[in-house]
Image 1 (tube, protein in one colour):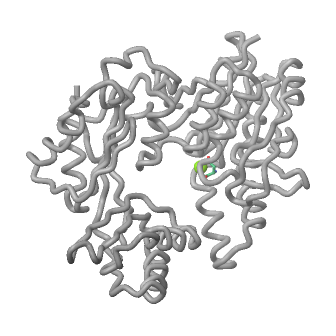
Image 2: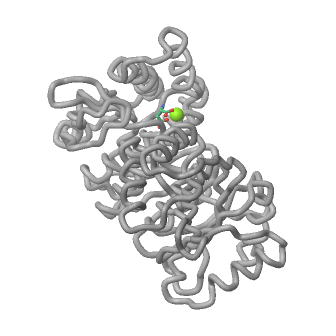
Image 3: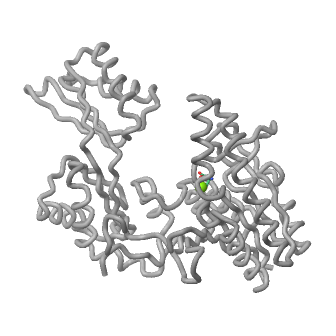
Amino acid sequence: MSIVVQKFGGSSVADAEKIHRAARRAIKTKLDGHQVVMTVSAMGKTTDKLVALANEVNPNPPRREMDMLLTTGEQVSISLMAMAIEASGHEAISFTGGQIGMLTDDSHTKARIHSIDAERIKRELDAGKIVIIAGFQGVTEHGAITTLGRGGSDTTAVALAAALKADSCEIYTDVDGVYTTDPRIVPQARKMDEITYDEMLELASLGAKVMHSRSIEFGKKYNVPIHVRSSLTDTKGTMIVAETTGMEGIVVRGVTLKRDLARVVLIGVPNKPGIAARIFAHVAKHKIVVDDIIQNVYDQGQVANISFTTSLGDAKEAVACGEELAKEIGFKQVELDENVAKVSIVGIGMKTHTGVAAQMFNALSEAKVNIQNINTSEIVISCLIDQKDGEHALQTLHAAFDLDK
Ligand code: ASP
Ligand code: MG
């Protein structure tokens, strides 16, 4: 019998009525002849509230205890979901991550899944039950409770689908799929029918807040087709798959804007072999994730300004790190620029089409957006721009690559 995994996010189980709606969806799938595994997130904003509460009690809460606290949210949802299904006259059973052997490593608050005991789940499915599993949580081999990082229920769902060799993995949410860009900035944004894992991974890392990145990596690794769709309607959402049907035709699939960036500029750095290596080894030691690196050489090649972008959250730490380096290596000054943003175009079709970069630069120039730096990979082209130009640039690119149509 085919197995379907259905994941319901926090907004889709926010109250009793919504829990019943999700339950009806699972029951209908079961009556259609499938075995159903559900995974649910904490109700509504529960996790945010628990995080706030923890910070009130201790501004620097131990990570192990954070996991202990946050996993309670999902435990509430699974038990209520099982009750809702039983209330409709069907059999259900709920499990925590630990109970189904969702084994993870021990990096509390961002654990990675090692294995899942699929047999335990299959026994319950074969007994005719809908099986409900707490999202976002696991357990270490020593029995400590862990979480997979914020938004991690998506990863639970895809990992379950992989372990159970499910026929499909449905992600129910409050939007009806994945969009060509953020509809709040570009009202012409359209829902995509399909997108590849690689494109989705890029969109997620470039700022599209649709799914937990790790879940897409899982999907790609185990080739689990993922269907992102609305919990309110029956319309088809977006399929995330290895290869899409109309792939050749579409060059740019989506555009993104990342605003929470900062640039740190190291001024007057000696332009000698080994200096960049020292700088970035030091940056890595501070665990700062670097995005773009830009180097300008001047004074007949004697000195350089080296800048790098990082997330706004890491900016202070990055400046502190730069100041240590200024002392150690002996350069003039460190500056922080918080007015940068990054617009990107993403599409598998770029691999086989030429002139895409020129088209992007052209569109930005016509829109009078100055490009400060350019970064490319096989399926992405990104431009660093002034933050005030961000929304305009996004709208411009969305139109320039015909994503409105
Ligand atoms: N409840 C967790 C969170 O809000 C996990 C999830 O929703 O996927 O991050
Ligand atoms: Mg949530």
